[in-house]
Amino acid sequence: KGNRCSSIGHPCPLTTWFARSALWEGRKPIDDGLARIFRVGRLWETFVLGDLRGAGLVRGEESFEWPHLQLSGSWDGCFFAARAAVDLKTMSEQAFDRVDSLDALRSGTGYQRAYVGQIGLYASHPRAQMAIFALYCVAKSSGRVRQISWPLVECQPEVEAAQRGCGVI
Image (tube, rainbow, N blue to C red; front, side, top):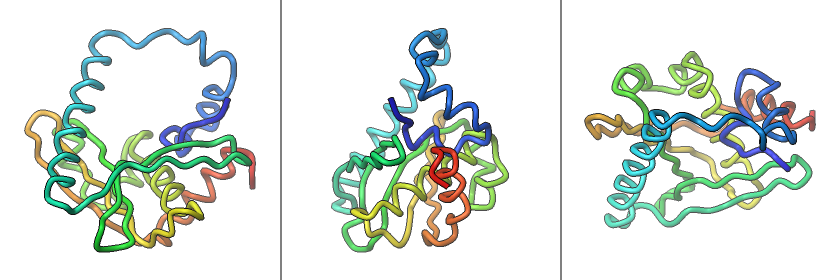
């Protein structure tokens, strides 16, 4: 069993180990309230991606695997006009108001810091050939959308840390 890119950038290295272990299968299920929050997030992601695709800006999802890293993941889309990968993250209104740059992600909560490594891994995959990453943040309550973009080279430290988390470096 391998890790998903979405968990690999987590600041606690035991999180990635736990997700690869047999213990993961026996974990306690999430409660109904948290499950509902995740469902709302998936609905917003579907809605915003539909708008981007309908406008002809983004083409479909793409999956990647790094067998030597025991790692897999998929981004939500790719801009037609530029070498830019696209991923969406839904968040609370409070988080949305704070997250407005790569630096804000780096200094955010554990899962927000993990986004940078996740996104860097996607964009650095040999098949991806991406130079820029565009993260769309969506506020769950209001539906406000913000795009944060940055060159791939700016998240190289997180990519290297994510690879170390897989035991590669």
